[in-house]
Image 1 (cartoon, helix red, strand yellow):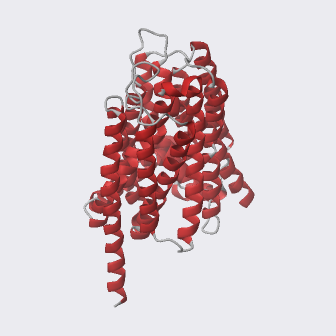
Image 2 (cartoon, rainbow, N blue to C red):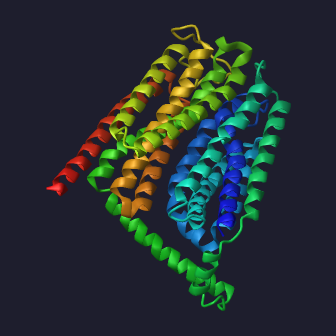
Length: 446
């Protein structure tokens, strides 16, 4: 039994590794690819597409749980993987209508995929193995930032323009990776306790299949209504209200490091023929920053060597240093230029070393905020963790969507200023929320 569950967790991680190697790489280079298309009829925007994805994702989360309950985690992940593959396939022969349609579909698919992943991971874990299995899964997932971006570096380094042939070759490779990840879900095995549970629920499997699904749907809808009521109650609590600015900031900086900053590096004329290849290296370095920060601060906070407020403050400082260096090192028109290269010059002569240092700092700072938001929510709402995390993902995704929509219109300095203001406010509010929790614990001791 243990071997079967371990097998399932490894296959789950491998499937996500392949799918998100394709999607993460796509998001990192999307706007750069769109700007370089030799297609007069294509009018889409990579920023708008990513904004649609995150916007739809935030609302689709509200309906994802009953769908997973009715059709099962395995089938849900296979169908969601096909939606991801469809989005990647659009870039092989791009058309505007398909580009935006698949953006909506992948937003729905993302909500279903991540909800199903959570269900499946819990089904294949026990109290003694949940930490190990979660670590195995996230370790495999984080590697998705390495392979696709490494291909970008070797394929695009030395090229000032991205030809249609180069684009097709890249996205065919990413499509193959996404399809392989989707097909890997088909070999996931059932665990016996799930089968026993279904037998009890369905009257020893004697009910007709339509009746079985109808009963599942009714149960799922009741659970969803109950969770939605809990969400409405929690969103009015002081802790959630205080943490909301920090959650919103995590959405802004998510959009910046995952889609905007790579585009800025690729558009910097002063990097010359190396600019497009650097997009891939930047994505890899962001991933390294995420892995280092997640592993280090997760371990340190688990051993109580650092307080949550210390890690969040460090995250704010790291990000502000990165924003200042980006302001000095990257041209102001980099995110909004309609051509493939910028027309203005930054305050400093653009340096590849500084650009990649900022990539690392962006990943490191993001891990600081996310690990501590998960930590405080899991601590304060231990009995209501699912609705609390749903609120977090909703706020984060909404602000990521908003940021992607304005990224194609605001100059770099204004985007950085918005993140500085919200980052400072979010950190301050996080401190207040943490202090409020410490005071309540002190009162309970008396």
